[in-house]
Image (cartoon, rainbow, N blue to C red; front, side, top):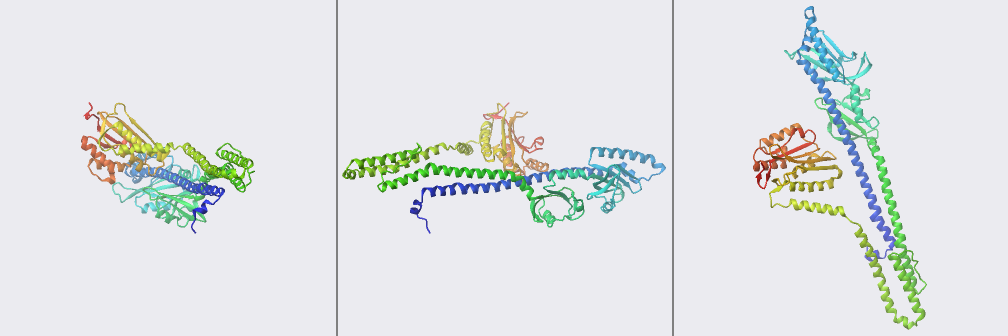
Length: 597
């Protein structure tokens, strides 16, 4: 059935106002609130997951450094003569002095390692000739299976699961140990002994507990075959993790976030593979723990939206009392007047346009009544045309007053920020579309970059902070147009992809050789050492591989070299690329086409 305009026009003013409130206030508010809460929940979940991933990365790096230091120490034992001599030399009266010297050298080295690396609790050296040394805490425990595995590995590093030992100093404890055969330096296929380095499990437990609190989930270490190497639940060590599908999920989505259900609850699985060992750090976080972190704020937002809804209802009631009811009363009294009841009067309660309209109506009714009372019917008929004119003027006057009220309301609703954004964007386009000149001043280039960053900052808000610095007397230095802005754009597009916020600093200053140095630095993801090395080599060898250098970097470097020679171009200062990324432009200082002296 089609909706006819006549039917819409016959709907009462009260129904129209309620419909407008529901369609334009209530439903949009509920929809926006629903979308906002869901979006906010997703953002908070992502922040929680990102924080957990960052913690896993920190733990992985910490564990890797500790384990690498232990492995490097055993490498030193293989190549150091005193260790091999101690393990190979049988103890006889003739070799006592030599073995004593070897022990003193080994004890000094091991003592230094135990003092500088407090996570190492005990080191044992066993030579095949029967010589043995145990330094650090004297311990005893079931280590034979790991020793056999080390022998079968023929000199390769073997890391154990967490297992119990008894310390003569502190009693029962748990350790994770490195077992490794020491091979002969002269004959690598021949073993001369074994080294065992024991790490305190409590050090690792402290690291893992800091990443995922116990009430939110668990964090454990899996071997490549899916068995548990470390977990706070000691009964799980050495066995496959009991959650069905977990091991397959970790293998199928390494380094990614996935979801899994277990015993009616949903868990987020966040894993990270450790370097060199192939182990996997796995965080199993309860979904309800993530939701609990956001519930308080979500309740606050719900209360806020409820308050907005209540204020909307109050606004509707105010509209009803201030406009709708007086209009309905005016309609009612007009109907009475239409039937010939000249006692119809409108109660005037306000001094606004509607109150003025009511007073005009009352005056009109009184005037009509006076005419009827004082004149003959003939005179009334003569005045009917005048009355119709007066009645026809009533509605346009009301509409005029109402439209005037709407016009003033619109003037009060200023949109200054939108105007400023449009003005900034217009200025940016005006500068970017000016292609008549290929050379610009440094001051003009920085103004162009400022316009670009201002627009980006409006888009990103507090997530982007920037500074532009120019040394005095460099305002009129000439340089090719659009050298700086592409670098700033790269920082935003590539440097801040995996980060929620960042900073960009552009510094222009005079170098030691009267050169203009422009540094564009950011606090983004930065470059790895390997990536920096490949980019420098590509620029030096004039290899325009955009996968290494990027389109903008390569074009800027070639443009500077073509104009100013091979001594200038794009650089990557090592001291500024340790945290974030820094790209440096080096060009000669020119003013009015002359090189400065």
